[in-house]
Image (cartoon, rainbow over all chains, first blue to last red; front, side):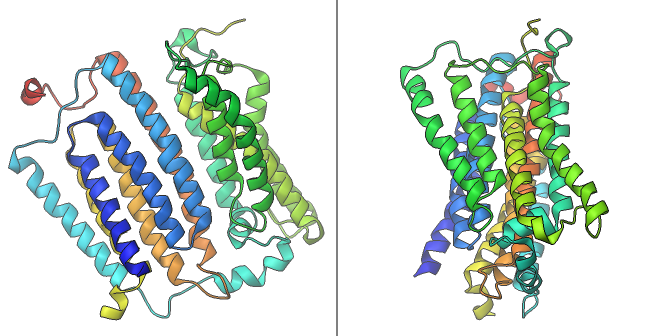
Length: 312
Length: 113
């Protein structure tokens, strides 16, 4: 029975992905992609990866969709109408066949997975006690493979630097224009009612992330969504990107992470290792600082390069 | 063979394989750069899904999946988002500067859209 549900889900995912590629309607493709992200979230829940499901639904379906819709609106105003897929068979046949081959090869790999399946679950559970955490995924992210998470934070900051550096010279250090010309009333209402709940859910996610599905990424994405909602409704202006407080907040999380990492060299076994007695408070502290940094970075990545001159 | 194909983990793995092909085709052939960025995201989603099948098969010790691939996929989703945001910022700048959202030379079929 559950397999029938999974098959329907998979069919829906593939149909939506194909629609994204072949449709002529640019906006429709983006909406299909957002639906795809949400369906994929359900798929991840079916794979029993609730942490991934929360991240995929929030980032894949939500933030990426918003980013794409804003880009589409910009392109419609500034660029010639983009062309559709080539109709000339010579131009799509060879790529289609090659991509089909890639899919077949991957499918063969999927069907030939070794059994019994290799798994690091034993090691992950065996050391869980030492970290004081209950959620093995959080333990991997912030303890066993903390270096990955640290580098990923730095990638986020670098991407933001890249986005900002695409602003016009006059707008460097200014703010992004998020507020639309006409703000619908329901949006303002939503932007007044939603944020308290959103913040509460985010705090809850960080806190339970130590033991249950949830964590910094999911919470950060929810906070970013709330901030964007408030700015879109015009209740608050987007922050000046030259603001020192803002930049401190963005860099604070990774900076604290690096600091704790070097602390590990002095008091524990090496870079990014935690003294066992205070592992849990350290991890929760890093998570709290990272959540704020992630929220700020994600929101500003969606907001895009600053396009208004800075106010002194 | 049939026993392998019937688990939901390998079903999603196969779905991932299909998504990789679809995304790759979109990146290779679509003239609209925004659509290529979406294709890049579909390609990524497919790779993550294959990895998700690996994670699900690694269920052991009372866990419903191997936590290591799951954590790597979460990291991957966030990094893919950062790359998408940078790509879109580049595309918006390109459109503002050149008035075109494609890298193709003047395409004759534009008149029909």
